Length: 218
Image 1 (cartoon, rainbow, N blue to C red):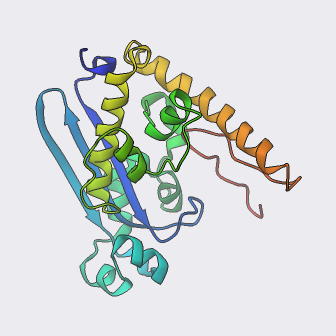
Image 2 (image 1 turned 90 degrees about the vertical axis):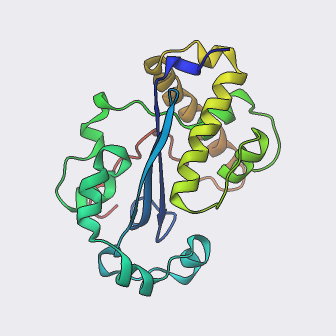
């Protein structure tokens, strides 16, 4: 089968942050990689100073970057955000007064291996972290939880999904992007219904690819 979606290049993006909450997490490391199209892989990585904030020990244990290292070796976080804004930096962009991604949606087409995997293999048991997706799709991950390794691995998982599932490869990028919006909403609704069996107030966010910013006080 030919390359999925007739893509010349894929751009992969990954962050390691101070926490898993996209509304409050600050960027510790980031990587943007370009791969595919019969051309060499190109990548650029950033280690930031976290804008002077602390990196919790639990987060440092995952990605290996301590507060001391970030302050000693990291570049100015604002400068890093400005350089990689076009990738996926909605929350940090807002903090610095830059045009956020929710105002650039017409420019972006996202391919999310997690959303795709849940749609094409919804009844498979087990976890679906990037580590587990790499294992399932026979993709080498390398140094897990480093932004550069995770970014390139995500691209490779997407390519493998496209080559294994012809109906995905037959979609244009616009069609795939729009389909994932619906898939993500359905997946969130299903998970929310399951949670509400034990917690009537449970809410699972279904917006994709960008979670809407909350209003002040919410």
